[in-house]
Length: 101
Image 1 (tube, rainbow, N blue to C red):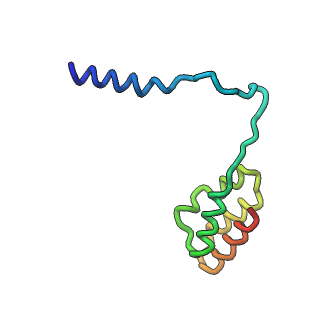
Image 2: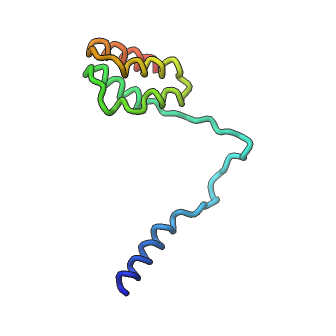
Image 3: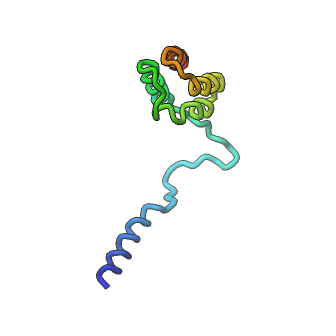
């Protein structure tokens, strides 16, 4: 019985914060809010890649983030960067994209 009571208490506490609220401002349904994309982390990741010449897990999602921010040309360059093998090419391409942000 004690375990059941503890389980019910913990579930009620977890679900308590899931309400809609309503105190904040909400945009009308017919207006789209522009997506504000902070590209500082993308730029930092590209600078790290430009220094090392190695594409690692920090590259994951960079082309998609650039596309969402409306930077389609840079997203295309980032997709090309992903397929590069030479460290020299990777450094140059990553630096070029980062400098354009």
